[in-house]
Length: 271
Image (cartoon, rainbow, N blue to C red; front, side):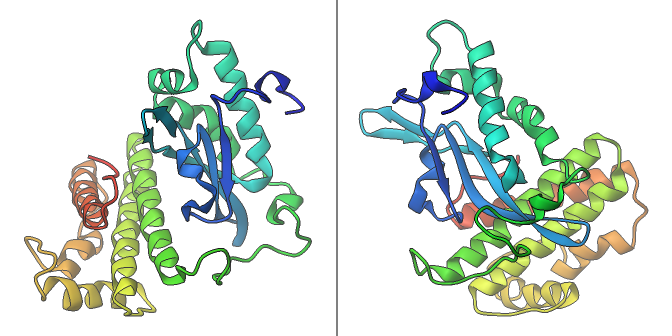
């Protein structure tokens, strides 16, 4: 408000924030929304916010869900608001509302716009400390405004699998095929771990996750592949990191993650 007095009384543009991905704060129905998260840098956890754009009500009892754009350290959230609103004022067409402006610019436009704010190589010391706290940041799961604790953790793992898949595609576009394959592998494991947790099955290592998923999901017929799940995922150890293998491996990971999203009644991530 200090920098954008002209938006203070603008009821057509709403900014909402929630401490977690639960919709208590209705961040998914905001033009600009944030929910609490974390990232890792220098071996430490950094408090972060997931940026969501393009949501809100559109009249006649209808609405639209915001899209997840990028994660930034929480101390940079105000910069996100500043950059987005400045871009809106600069590039919006005459009488163009935020939704029309967002749709015209596209999700990738805002990802590239905000990407510098996600850079973890230039973190200041205070960015390892969350707002309102003095000690080192730590994630925790507890009963707060709601009691969906296990559901929260399952959703968190699925969202993290999506994020790793996005990293895989980004590094593939940069021709970093080894990195792309590695991120795709982690996406496989993270999504499988989420589904196991949803059944109350805890797995402490990646190999256990892979084998337990085969036992509890593939052999039961809930998920099916052209080969066993371990054979599918562990191709990473039997192939050179070529472009050809990276393409095929990312396609398989994308197919799996999308199936997980569909079965959880979530919007598919990448197609």
